[in-house]
Image (cartoon, rainbow, N blue to C red; front, side, top):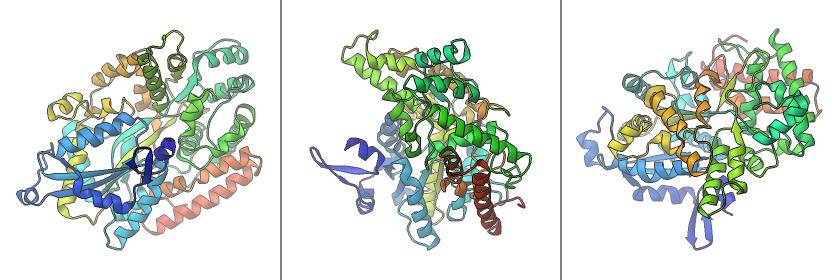
Length: 517
């Protein structure tokens, strides 16, 4: 039941051992009991607002690093509000629930009704919602943060800004790097057979194919999803971009079936077909957002593409084993944590080593919220980004701050919100790793993600068309049908390209997407 609760929305305990689902009515009723929060930024709540306490209702995902939710819900939100008389009510739901909730609330905003929340956090760029969100508020937050902490990284700019309308449809506070995870001893043993020498880990996609054949023979196949879910959508785009192809060009023209991109897309499809047939197993067609973690930590797969939540979960289990008194040299949990490794960069393809963010944390404020609520939401977003710096967080009473609370899972999109020096100081003397008996600097290479992480829709922006293509899984289905042998690469590409062109044309007619074809 506990695992089901983690993946299936919000639940409330009504008695020991008894739970029921938390309904929307329950949540709205809970607003009156929300946590008091406050502010840091130069934007200040007016005296009138102070005299009329505001309730700010936030929906965000149930974080894959549980200590982050503990910090946000029980430290940051209540401490933030004590100075300003704003009540913050936070609802956490499973990642797969966010799109349906956002669509439902957007429809209510379009109809002039209360959406149910004032602000939401999305995990992909929510460009299709541009007309329902407060783009002016987003711009003000981003401009203020640029002034206070420095540039907004290009990955975030392309994931929140529409160059056609010149509006920000969201504010990104973080991106999550997406390296490849692998089991060290398995990889070394398999690479010695496949490549003639024991290598330190996958560097190219060709490595994954060649070594993956041996890993599958060893009974520990490669685990890369081929289903209709977010992780599949991310790694397949990373592979396409590394082959020098993608959905669109910089101007927003659909190019995946246009020469020379057509041949590159067909080559990528054939490669994934071989990768599935020779290194994977049928379970990848039923992958969920939790499958990477579950299958890797259970020891069933040897390779996965994922955020560092796999490593952090392994380390948490190891720390628990050490607390129970297990010998670190023989404990299965500790040995698993030590053997869970990440690549320094995204795997390289024919056109380069191009990865994606695992998820893109983007907040948006609904446009029809009362002004005091929108002002409170803007202030919270500014202060949340400032809280990356552990010194700021300590001074304001929000320790340990966003970066440390997420255990380096949430990487700042305002790169200087926490300095590189402070990021590396944490990663090179990692307290989570040390508590697990793991190598204390193992995750320091994640810092290279600023060099290889790309946005959904690269090299163009994450437009409304890209948003719809992503969330209707068109590319996922294209690759899966080829891997399963249902379609030839040519058939799957032609069908997907036709679908994508219809989506782009629809949004062009609404004035939200550029390009001509």
